[in-house]
Length: 434
Length: 166
Image (cartoon, rainbow over all chains, first blue to last red):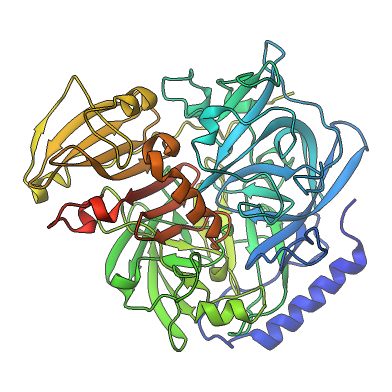
């Protein structure tokens, strides 16, 4: 069920071509842009394209989505299904797959055993993303990515009609339970390979109402009100699959080649498991940027200027989001709601910032480009190193302004995400490095 | 089925400095035992739902043109509600590892938020930054570190800068 060898070789060749053609063309990204050999057991190919096909056969139109193929199996069996176009997300932890039930429009059709609590109730989850939620049962699977396997781990299955969304979950925002549509995932799943071991962690192991954020539910019936908030021990929660690999389990590297300033219809790279565990995943000249317990560090902008805490690096954000037009002086796009928060400078800008570890060191300069987002979107390309826009937040301790270094930041860099508590040659996680 | 993972270390949630913003606004702070809070656009004296819903402790502050009702939920999330002198909630903010119940907090503006979220094109974790004449709403972060604010422009008292809503 791993990717065919031919495609992997092709991927490598395309990567080299992209590197040769695109290198230096946007002038901003430079550095440790090695792409791991595709034949390592700890490597799986990443493709950046317009996403999986929708109902009409055309791609759903994701911009800057890094996708991999993930295989899930009934635990302990060879009864497996490969799911393509699963979004690589270093901003969350845990595997979530969209069901193939017609309405949801995903691929997962393999029946998996449910996670049950001690009372034999099915466990379901309302997981929070930026403005919405994914709702669905927690099920158990052997998860294979490339040559690695996590045995019998909890994953979330989104879009099954087994249990209606409970009331408290509806308050989170939009129900992201379809491939397409206004609040569609635009992916067949989310592979959360972020800084944390579990998606929720110790808070969800507390009693409901006493600090538990209400992420997990125990479902005794499919009637309305049949699912109630529950606590779940950390070891039973939906977990970062990497932490359950036998080896190469301390973090990941996202490796993407440079892309031209005008973008590219596709880009091919690698998701590499482990940091310093093999010859193909060493830190090299990457600098470690430790994060705090929220997964954030400080960005200085300009490079020796104002400090912006709660910044983060995140392959699940598609652009580089920072500050506001009022602060940066960069024009935003005009047009429909949704595009008017992107930056649309009349000509491309090259900017300098610095990323600083949460405890104050080290300070690592970073150069990046911002181009006219409307022109990028109109090009119908899917891979952009210079897409950016406004971020929320103002310069106050209560609501700090910050940088969200999304996938646009990743091209031409190897970006390391080390998991909390995990030992690596660069010290214990959590940290980012590039 | 579940092996204990030795990497698991319970992260302490770092709380933002409660008082950092107080000097700038020259506020009088009182701790209220009879909270009265409302959803965005609602009447402060009519509802006590939010504190109950969020199981939060409450701190009340007063500025020249408005008062601030700060709730600290046991989940580690801090919510602030900005209330006009005549008792209407014109802005709300939140920061913490998990989001509050936005349906409760945004009240009649929840649908406006949903519409803005549906137009968002910033990817899975990318921010929401939406301005309309009815509602300004901004959200950013990722699981375990969310923040956001929303306000109703026409309800913001004269003389109040939007960045005071924090």
